[in-house]
View 1 (tube, protein in one colour):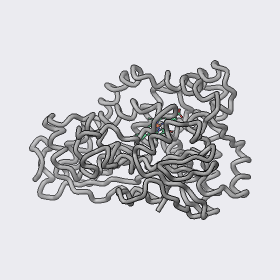
View 2: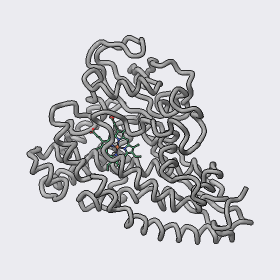
View 3: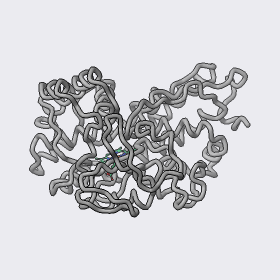
View 4: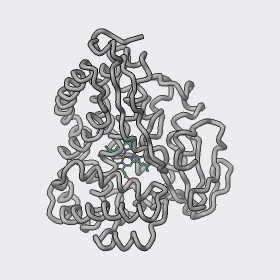
Length: 400
Ligand code: HEM
């Protein structure tokens, strides 16, 4: 169940339950909002060290491949419980400062408007469109590249690397696949290593703050995965959910529903990161359950968002409902997502402009998510306007 946990969210789970993964390793799954928050707020008892550990142990053959590319991943951000974390985080936080994020809004709105116009034309002509490929997949990376100097690599190369990393570290994979993934991840690591020494912007800021090249590589590695892939995934999941919420779409279009409320309700109901890990540093208890030091603690962020003690209508998409913003989709505490503001801005711009595309459309191909402990990784979202409606304009209003 660990690997398709987004299909199993309900409030009948015990607050803390032991679940074995595909290798027989036991994890303590934490299912309640208050307990997930308690763990996140206490990094001394529940350390972040295992955040990027491979859930399928990497065999020697794949480790050799990684080593052949000089792959190393020292603790820098999400998995860094050492004294270097605040300094690295503050350099990144500066690069992603809310004012710098806000300054990208108009540019992004222009790009999205042009794409939405093209997609509207295609839908009006009766052609299906893939909103994942056309809107969700590359936009977060394009924005990130404007905020933070990145290595000169094609979008497709970065996306392949990021998805390979999410699979290698968080999916149940066999040895053959681990070898393939190790090549993809290792190859891009080489690009990052060179950039860490020569690159400007964030790489230089980290070097200037005295961080060694390995730390710069680790920070860029995590940023290129967390800083774009997550938002792409969220866009696809939220647009899919909205395709089945005609009242919310109508409200978005007539202005009676705020786009920021829609984004928060989306983060609560369809978070792209469904779980996140910590490791107990000492013997302790959690919600009355004994936790031995060394245990892997899996925080079910998606279940925390649907905790009936926090939100009155946990499964309904009701923007602005009480508790809607209390989700833990971005984590909490000292490791709370440093890109939250950016992800929110990007999603608000895309959803605000793309809402009319979804009105009256049918979903031809829903996003499919492969098995993964933490990331949804949807692959497509194809919609089409039903034949009789192919010539309707979104401004005609919703189809009931
Ligand atoms: C919808 C999109 C996103 C979601 C749901 C998300 C979620 C998360 C979560 C759950 C964590 C772990 C928090 C914890 O341990 O308490 C995290 C950490 C992080 N995220 Fe995000 N994230 C998103 C987008 C972004 C973006 C756009 C960036 C940067 C451009 C980013 C950068 C980071 C970084 C650097 C960390 C590590 C922070 C630290 O350890 O100090 N994320 N994110």
